Every structure is written in structure tokens, then in C-alpha cells.
Amino acid sequence: MKTKIRTILAAGAIAAVSSTLSSGCCSSCDGAACSPKDVSCSCAADPKSCSCKTCGCAECSCPWGNWALFLPYDAMNAGHLILEKGADGKPCAKLLWRWASPTADMDVSVDGAKFMVRRSFSKPKGKENDKAAWRALRVTGVVKGKTADCVAVNVDGNGKEIDKPISFTAKRNPPIGPAPDLSKVKYGAPVKLLAGTMDDFALMGGPKSSRVNGWTLKDGVLSNRIMRDKDGKSLHKNGNLQTKRADFFDFNLKYEVRVLPGCNSGVYLRGIYEIQVLDSFGKEVDCHNMAAFYGRITPSVAAEKPAGEWQTVDVTLVDRHVTVVLNGKKIIDNRPVEGVTGGAMTADEFVPGPIYFQGDHSDADFRNMVLTPVVK
Image 1 (cartoon, helix red, strand yellow):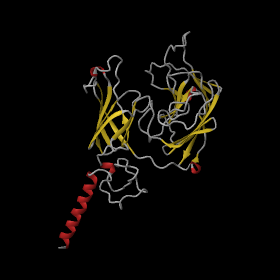
Image 2 (cartoon, one colour):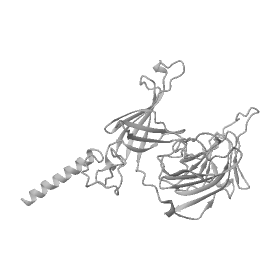
Image 3 (cartoon, one colour):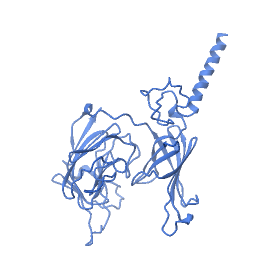
Image 4 (cartoon, helix red, strand yellow):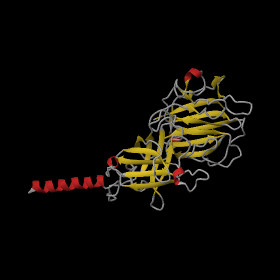
């Protein structure tokens, strides 16, 4: 009799666990199993209100959350996707595809473990009513626990595929934790990144790259120059530059930058997060302006100086949060980092990387660049 009872109880426990794992994150939690102190469910129906160790998030099939996209390109192969429910309960998304900024204006659908996101259609002038001429990127995926098998293809307004689909893998990122207490962060020995020679850097793209190396390092000033014709048009495309040292993770980075007229450059933290360099003096605040976390975080105030003047930038990256001080004014205050920015070297946000400088757009000068690593 006792054996039979134990068998029944064990079967019930197994059934309960099975129900928990298959029913979707947190849907079976009874409250007692949930605690804000527990490991957060990145794929929970409402990640902000439920944090469970027992709902089997690592193995569930719900698509909600923060996804790294590993794209099958030789260069610019990083993407990022956030899938969540809007205030109206309907699915919404933010997609970064290789370069530029994340796009939120999209058609989104979710069906169990399957999801589809499609950018808004571009409609050529004069062909606004010709759906065959419309173009949009469509991404579909099937979630399998921590990963998803995905396919991307360009389609017209009729849903017809207009090029060859590509397959790739997405990986679910863990949720972003609370903002760190920066007063308690410990730092190691500072590294003067511009104290050496050009041998400390490498042109990105490898030996087969068609990009021109316009970078020089003289008297502690790292400069990029693009050759132009008499009308100011660039005669070639310069390459991006990275530090050969690539073991940086969390750190404080201070530098001075001289923004030349019309300048558009950038400094990539760990090779994946761009701090913008732009001639944006006098403009309204924007997530693409000087010292913004490109395309993702808008500065709280405009603190730029006019082109031609040296400007100071102080960036702290700790626990997926970023703080930026521009010319002595805090413009980004310990804000969470949702994902990589356009032009990232990889979609993986959990590995060390280099500092890289954007050189393919315009001229820029850097000096007094000091990186001080965080010691855990």
C-alpha cells in the first residue's frame, strides 16, 4: 500500500513538472515558487512581474525575450531582436539587422514556439500601389529552448520571396539585471591605448579587404583621414580600426575626440557597443548624436562642442549598463544596454573584445585614451 502511494505521488510530481515545462514560462507558477530574488525568466509572459527558478525557462518554447542573431555573412554578421508584449497585449518587436539602428515599425506575429517579424514595406516613389514593387525583410523563427532556428528573406507586398532565404541561429540572452552601484565598483590598472604605435592596432576586414588604411598615430594622436577630390567627395572608403588587444569586458574608458566638420565616426566598446562620434553641435538631443549609445539610448541633455574643438568623453560599462559623461555633463546615467549596436563585430554580448574605431565615414582625431578595467 505504501509503495502504491509513493508511486502515485511520484507520478503526480512528474506530471506537475512536465506541465510546468510545457505550459510556457511562469504560466504554472502559483506565486510561492516565484520571487524577485530568483533567477529571472527571460521568456516569461511578463518578465517584469515573474522571476522563477522552477518554471523551466531554459527549456521552454516561448519566444518572448532578448535574442542575439548570428547571421551568415562574412562581415557585419551581428543582429539583435527583442520580442515582447505591448501595453495592448499584442506582440511587438525591435529588430537590428547588421548595421544602422534597431527598427520597431514592424508586423509581428507569435504562434506558440513560432514567430514572424517583418519590417515595414519600402514603397518606391510612383509605385506606392504596386505591391510587386514593395520590399521588406521578413524573419521567421522556431524557438527550441535557449536557441531558435531562423530564416530571413526579402519579400514583396504580396508575400512573394524575391531573393534566396538565409538560415541562421538565434540565442536567447539572459535578462538584464539591476543597475550596478558604481560607487562600489573596483578597478584594475589603467591601460593607455594610444601610448604605443600603430603596431598595437589592426585594420578590420583582413588582408582581402578593399578598404584603405587612413589611420595614423603620431605624438599620441590617432587620426583618420579620407582622401577627397576638389569638391570634397571621398575618393575611397577607409577601413575601421581595432586594438589588437581584445580582452576587454567591463571598464571605464576616457578619451578626447576632435570632431571635424561633418564628422561621423564612432568608438565601439568591446567591439559591439558604439558610442557615437558626430558633428551634432546645436542639434536637438537624439540617439544618433555625439556620445549617444548609437540608435538605442538618447542623451538626456545636449553637451556637444562645435566642430574643431577637443571634447572629453567618459564611458563606464558595467553589468550591461552604461554611463556617459560628455564634456563634464552626465548625458547617460547607468542605463541598461538592450543589445548590440549596428556594425557590431559579433552578436555575443558575453565575451571580451577590443576597442574599435569607425573609419569608413569621415575624418576624426582621438587622444588621451585610457581604459581602466573593472575587477570582479
